[in-house]
Image (tube, rainbow, N blue to C red; front, side):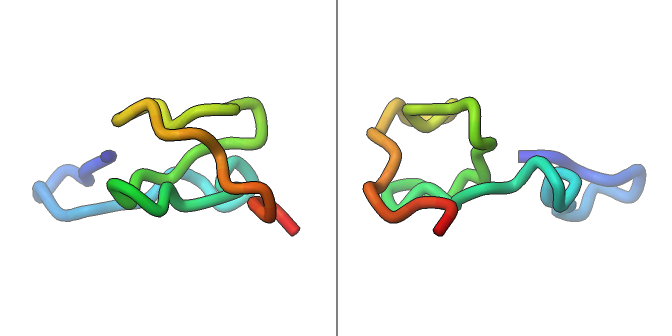
Length: 48
């Protein structure tokens, strides 16, 4: 999870977001077949 200078939540840049992990809510890119935070598999319909 990214944070801005004031410590608030800031998601990754839009062009890199493909899906949000259904297990932990982490934003993952198209290159990620598993969640970079919890390791859950990418949903079948991710990015559609």
